[in-house]
Image (cartoon, rainbow, N blue to C red; front, top):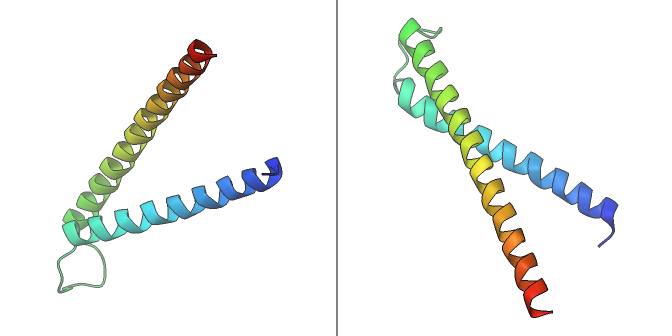
Length: 88
């Protein structure tokens, strides 16, 4: 595959994954923090605080998972490289 094409595909996939994460976070935090029947047009202080904490936790967890997956990927690459060197 052409390197430019691969880079473009990776960028498109990243945008798609970020959009999916945003949508999941929005839905999860909305369900958790906003009652189904609105009483006021504006968010209450409690709803705002809940949303702020929910988003912060969601983003923190997303970052932690990303780091762990990257770490595992690097380990897998090293194991594959060692296996290739050992069998070659």
